[in-house]
Every structure is written in C-alpha cells, then in structure tokens.
Length: 186
Image (tube, rainbow, N blue to C red; front, top):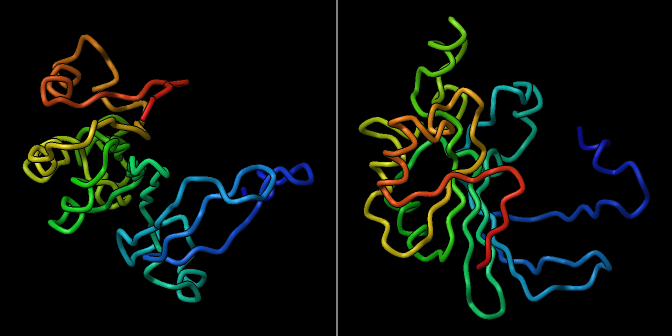
C-alpha cells in the first residue's frame, strides 16, 4: 500500500515521529510549516490486518495513533479516524481542540454482523461505535469546546442517510457528518 503513495519521485516524504513529541509539519518543499503536530497512542494493540509476527517487532505505543495539529495562531485540530475506546484522558485531550474529526465508522457494535450475516464487531475491529451506552455520542456528550465532525464512516452506517433517525440523533447531539470533498475552515 505505501508503495502506491510513492509512485513519483518527491510525491511523499517519510518522517519518523514519536508519540508524545511535537514536530513541525513540513510543506511540499520540505520546509517547516507553521503547523505543529503531536501523535499520541490510543491503544497498544495493533489492528487485525497487521500480522501477529510483524506486530511483535513493532513498538506497542505506536499501534494506533491520534493526531493533534496546532497552527501558529493556536487553533487546534484533533484527528482520530480509528478509536478503540474512550477514556477520561482522551476526553480531556479532545476538550482542548477547536475542531474534532472523530471515528464514525460504525453506528452499532454489531453493524457488520447484522448487515452481512457474519464478520467482526466494531470493537473487535478497533472502533468504538457511535451509538450505545459506551458509544461516542454518549461518551463525548460533555465536550463543550470543539466543533465535532464524524469521519471515516463505513457505507453500512445508517447515519449517512439524511432521512434516518440515526442522522437526526447525530445532528441533534451537535455533531456534523463529513461528506466526500468536505472543506472545513479552522
């Protein structure tokens, strides 16, 4: 997969990052931009698509990362397309963001099983579902500061249907649902 990202010379620049350590995002010319980034660990368990043998040779704290980007003006964006669990430390981190782009992959834990008749649950795949007592809608309901947008939404997620009760529930809770080609000002 990563070879595809580097089909042409200079198309991609790879940089090693360390969770918990801020770094400057570089522009296409390789110069430091006015945006800093900090990666942080969301879990020590690698996704199922990473072979067990391979995951044993990797650093556990790098298994699944969230990102916080900060502009020189102090505006902060939290980017988390895959979140396996929500704890108080994560909620506190998110409260400091101005914009939150958050994992909206599945509406319910058993979504794929119900739709396809088999498969893994959302949690088994490393995604906290949007709905339910431990879902992101309820666990993040107390966030006051950030603008909240669900991203990384699976095509089976009923909240994509603007006429559905799930869509209305998300919107009534103050969340937005990202669309293809969305543009968001921060």
